[in-house]
Length: 166
Image (cartoon, rainbow, N blue to C red; front, side, top):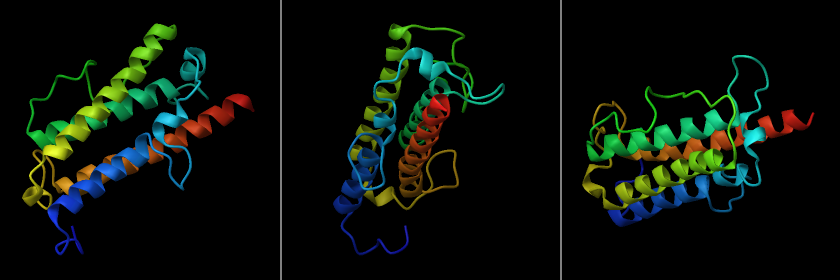
């Protein structure tokens, strides 16, 4: 956490929570956030695949949810294996699904985001510079990395939406 030693720890917590919120569901200068990129998408649009072997929007949502979950587990030293899908990183989307299943996928993303925010808010500020459980990355870098990850995948989703219309 170079350059942050003079800031109060509550400022660091507020900064990280703001970064997570802006990248996920608050308006910012950089464009669409992750939650906004999913607005008004139908299950069919979320399941559309640009080419065989390429990820679709549904898989992007599950992937982002997984990394929010995994990062939270590292912060709280939680037990792994409690994510609703078996495996890690990328999860296959269903072959076909309706509005209820798509709503559940988006709800999982929202829930993992909320749980991560709670963990960050309660995280001991004195440990932000220390590596998180099971990683070489500090808690600060891990949390900020989740925000960057959301922005990256929001861009991926925006691109997939444009490719669908092409």
